[in-house]
Image (cartoon, rainbow, N blue to C red; front, side, top):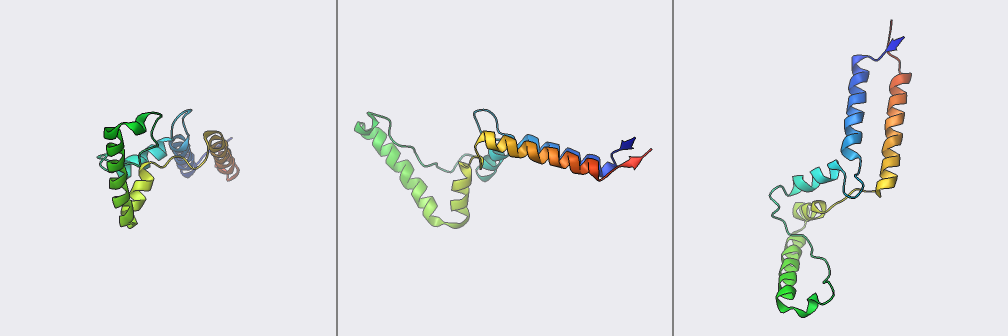
Length: 125
């Protein structure tokens, strides 16, 4: 009976950890996406682009002023370009695919990796 070598165990562990980090939850981003969001702004000091007004909010002067201020702060940083622009984009970045497609791709990667480790053979007893 073949037993996996030490290197094969490490490959399987790395693939398993990669799958766990990239697997999206049912209603949120994956752990890897959350890590990227946090890494570019750990102190949550960068502004985000505000969404559109809810119905009736456009009539409130204070709400409009706060919305415009946040938009101006975002635009000023975005116009600087370079690393600052990339940080603003990565702060709100999500997963590249929808969760269903991402799960299928990750399952395929896990199956192919396990098959390749098995086919490469191990130490024979």
